[in-house]
Length: 429
Image (tube, rainbow, N blue to C red):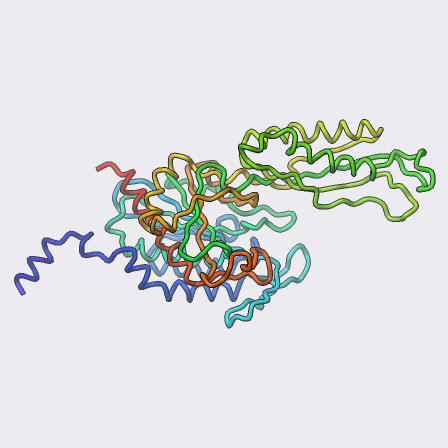
């Protein structure tokens, strides 16, 4: 007995503590349980009331300092190690989508909600249920390993990543405005997104622009109405609009250096006229711009209105351009230095063969608002079962969207190890 007591006294807390891998294995059933609950009861953007209550209750059970009602329904938990060091933020998004689930699962969603005045089905069709469950798991492990921490951890559960309802504001931008990165000031932030077409066990990363800026626009072409049989009496906004749509494509194909980064200009909606034999006086079109570097974004902001107005003038029409239209997201930009410093953590956590350098995507993420304020890294982790081909995996934002529970364990470990390793590298003894 004396020998055992002596041995215990000699062992450090690090040696006695369970490893992150062991703890992640231990809590995996709980993470899956949380995911199933959150998936079965999704809520739309800025309406995540029951979701927020569920998360806040859990964070309080861990003994964390919890703030609710941030950006309407957001929840923030604070873990203070009691020792000096950096503040690390970890973020998960909370909202579902107006999509009817078609998966035959015992925990499938049958919920409904109000979206822009319409009663709609609701589904976690982009994996936000897994994001919340993984962050809850990381919070549990980091509380267990509190003695190993130096500094503080903020657990940010963010509403409205998919966009606030019409006429409302929400999401990361509002959380930033309300001071989520302050008191204490955040030094670095980490987030991840599960991927339906990436193998379970893989993590994809990239320094620099990883997801595009999104800038919606509206163009109104004003002409002169006339009978369709006498077009020479008109100033035809429909023909003008057709030339505008084609002209906008040259912004990318002829004005940007596409060897650097891709960009997209899409017109998604055109409305004008109501009869086959009447040339209308006005046409309205709306669209979206996606860019992956600041130079391309600034160029299109400057060039698009000039091109549209020049084309309209050449047709004797007038053009009004609104850019951005109602909202916009910056580029989701992984800080180069932070990405380089944390890459070894990805390798040690997932294994070198499972760490994949990724191409950027032209989808958007409002995690970018956090990255505008502090260095941040945003990662993709695999959720596709290994026996499913990538081309057969259901896409995000579809009724068949599905990711496997087994993918979450890596996400829990990554969030935990990124926090622990960042603190170790940025704490002065």
